[in-house]
Image 1 (cartoon, rainbow, N blue to C red):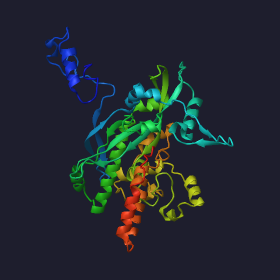
Image 2: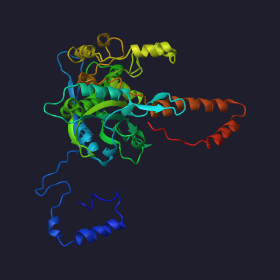
Image 3: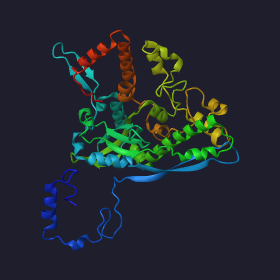
Length: 431
């Protein structure tokens, strides 16, 4: 086992030689010991479960039907693979890389060597106001009875992105990752740092769900599309209902006692600071309609005022009209759907939800972590890759190319542009 756990993931000739000389030719090596050997079982043949092992479970969602007498139909979706979030924290803080973790936040100040004026630098999560406020709130809260350990924060930076795995075919995956903001961004953003922790694979609705929806009585084609979208949202938050389990909620309140890489025992409090995703997934997380009348996942600015973008009054309205989860409205709308047999996009449901482009889905972040101080809308930060590099900037760049092509000497201009572009030095952006 020592031979298996050392070296790279590719067995070289040197490793094979070491297996023969150091293991098979060792004085205490006995081939009888290998009879009935199983890699994941103990001496009695019982399977060994490791603390950070993967878990596979099934998700059950309730499909509403248009009937007061008949209750919602449960539908099981298999194949949700995940790691408990508490075990991810254990794995991260027991890793050798944890020696580079910043456990206490601070303000990064730059001082001009000429006139000695000072400016604050915003460059890391652990130098942000959000972390400083969280640490201050933590220190003001009462300590655990009889405990004198120092309290620190494990800063969660979540990221998920549904993606196709091949150019041809339907193979796809929906991975969920977590980075720890305690680590410097220059290390965290390096592909070889292995600081990205894979948490799970979110399942998608199977094709068989369409067969179930077609058997429901009194459902139109447009109603079936709305119902399919409703089930998709239910599935996403059902997964987070499992991830935000009792162990994680207990750790969020009372911490996890860990021995970190410095050899000191700490009380580590997990805190979710950011969730990075493209816009459709942000709409899923915020439980709002995709491109509804109020499409922003952070504020209630209506779509009709988008022409004011960039103005001072627009920024003021976005600060003053921040989203606050309408739990009472959502619960009332769900009663119309699941108890009174109304359609998910019916008039009564829309009236119950009111303005704000809300949908009749229980937001698990607001339900479970909202009472503990998490703002599920504030954590949805700008995603540079999707919103700029593949979104706004890509559209602008394409438009500029079309403008050049439209000119009389467009082909020559494009060639000149290409030659100039080759002189650019590509500098990676550390996010």
